[in-house]
Length: 216
Image (cartoon, rainbow, N blue to C red; front, side, top):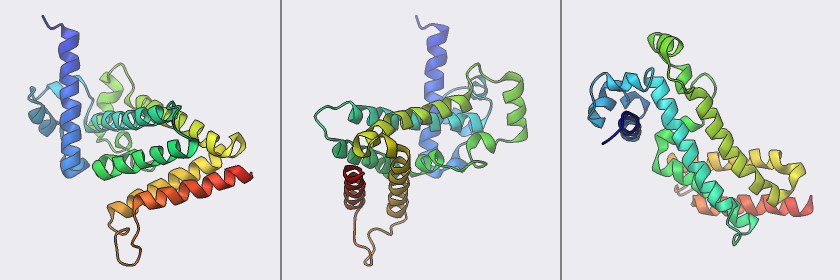
């Protein structure tokens, strides 16, 4: 027999999957608890037993996005057959590939303060979170997941440029990857004027940073 906890976990999983699908199809505006519940095949009230509102649901989807990227970077970081440059190229390509495959979710990962899901919730949503929110804090979970990604990424940077330069060049590499992803999504990389690819730019970026590391 399926236990109550197993049933609740399955419902939560279905809701998260449905929300992610709707986000992919139409962006954050397409995600409503009513549509998510219908797509997941659950009762109209079921989403509110797992999430305080749309903002907490989207925050959970973003958290899972960070976790997936962190898993990919962890696999690269712990692969002893790869050089530091190969690990870094793989990590940046994983990030850019995420943007290519799930652009709406990718953009939500990097939303600036004041524009994140939990900061945009409707007043009623915020009241629900304060009065009857779930035991786990979705904002804390998102921050933990993003921190886990950084914790997997920065050691690769250290191997590439040394500990003293880790944070500076880590920020540069992430900014470069984010810019490359944005340029690719907007179609600017394939224009006649630029005629380059994301992979070519990643190779150049990592090579330039690695050269700095060797001479530091």
